[in-house]
Length: 300
Image 1 (cartoon, rainbow, N blue to C red):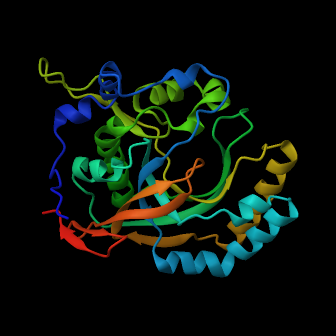
Image 2 (tube, rainbow, N blue to C red):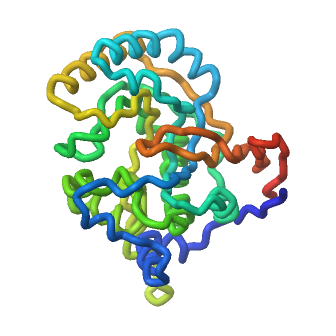
Image 3 (cartoon, rainbow, N blue to C red):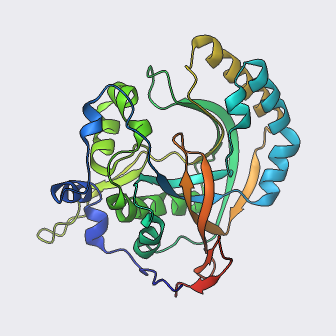
């Protein structure tokens, strides 16, 4: 299989990162009706673009954190969380679509890739989908927000969000129902217009008339998640997990250096855990590996 990579994303596409969802909705392909309901939207399939963690990073986490973390989860009676499958990763963007051809469409729409990224993973913490919503919540390891590679990572999130979120059929289910109701106005706007919060977009961009640049809104917070949970995030549970974060930050006070040489198109579960890789794309030469077959094709 040979797919052509779009070597650059046009300024018009970036500028309409927000309006793209509106245009698609007008064509009847995007359904935001779940945003007005009190329950979560039914989950069909979610696809995403992620950096999978290098083996050396997984080795450090396996040898230092994952054992104590599993014990803490079991002690808290979070058996499901202790057993949840996930390919460790740092997310670029997620889109919900029942269309099984979405990965191929994502590959065809891929913007210019970033260079190889060298970042530091540091600081464990808990995150709620929306404060007060109760669930879902996550236990994360952050990315240090400084350096050229971090800037490259953030810039790629902006272009990837513009290029890939028009492929959604509606908002991510975990951003609907009680989560959407508890979100602030800025997050609600992102869910309505690109289907997901926590991404970078360009608003009021070039319209072909005045030539003015748009304003980039950077809400993306790159991180890797160690726990995915739909259990109610009670004050007691939050205290337990915050204590775990404190202990783990003492174990890895200097963080872990990570080099991302690939980015992958994947399928995810409701909470964002990666279930499988579909395509792995080299940031060095643009080569694409189809994971199911092992076949490789060049994107250049």
